Image (tube, rainbow, N blue to C red):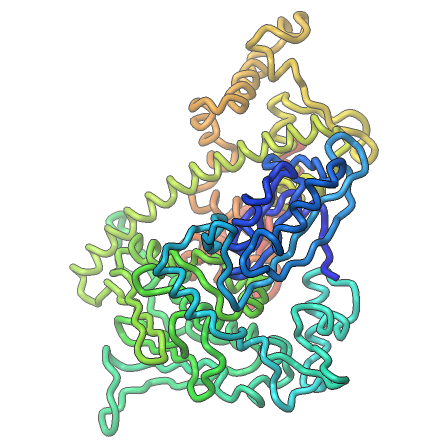
Length: 606
């Protein structure tokens, strides 16, 4: 039995494998989503929660509920394999109620609705397929997922139950490791009393995956020059293999390649040295992750190949492009050949842009001044090539440097604007939540906003400073209240004596509060003059923003966020540690960083 948490269902963003609908949804409309999920990667459809997150439930109209339960069977052709789960909850009226979770399994067949229209899930949309796309999908779904096939000779003894237990702890699964394997995703099934262990189980949890999949490994070759030579002219500098379970193997390969990617340093126009990477970190990392997640593991005779040349970088992955993915639509179309492996890698933050990574790959290469990635399908291999615009020639570097800095400045402005909008959205979410329930605990605010505990407190303190909310009672047993007169001061409502006695600072808060409610452009202008922006550089502001949402961040991760070299990243991090804004943990090699919560508390109290 799958386990669902009502708060997660209420606020989880819609995406490739998750959608949320009101109980008012019609069966025909629900069939479109069910068909799209079945034709793609499967997923969960939650019914009884409004678009704004309010729980209205499914009680009170049994006839309509029965119609919705019939959708996978009577409104989809052929019928879809679906499971219905009810989750007990309290609706927005305070009554006991339920929401319906319809779990759709990915299918080996092509499904359509009663009008013979086929759909396919792309991100958070259900895309209608034309005849050609439908036929391509039909051909691609000729059999089961290979990751689900039982591995000949494999038993429970070949699985590392200690690692399975670690994974269960990570995802919050309370039962023992063996129960998880037997009751989830068909990792282990019993047929006539004999255990059948799937390929996904061996690759993800196996003690020695290469015992059964000898070439399920990553080979990395570094060449001297820009072409591959053989015989007496062989130009191989390094040739290494990485094996093991998928997560460890992928991370080790990424760590090694990071030591092989060139960085260029030269004197910039401001008389300071500038260091830029040969390729954006996300781009070369994405190609390795994609190859591991989407390779055809039924092809047993070859490895994933990573080839590093002086001025280009190639990754070769066994298997043809899956499903309806083609070279001309690879930026928009997503299909998981190994959905269990993809979901597992997403849990470990290796898959970062589920269904959108290739599009981001193209964008980041362009923003860094590099040519577009080149995808090719050659026989049974998919090959991807990144070309670097950087050369040792100073003229080329100067041109690249200008393009790089221009793109960085553009990205910075875009990120700052996005951050301001995100901050305003989170402020409104917290205000509306307090209105609905003044005793809302901090963990609920965290689920609503997706922020850390310290991030939530920053917003609450900011709202308190603006006079928009106040705390009544102690921190432990008190409650929050929205200061309505502050929100409505401009309209003339609220106690007159209170309005007349306000200070100039409070009037500024009035203006900020009204702009927050109306989305006035002036609010954006005020937001740019934040306390952090006044005291730190732009990059320090980005670091603080990222650390407010993430803990135990490594230098490599922050370098990817800032899109600068490791040495420059260390410079910013070390300066912020010295100033007390952030705290470092561990030795240099394994050092991680967090927000200095004590400093934040002092700032808030002041």
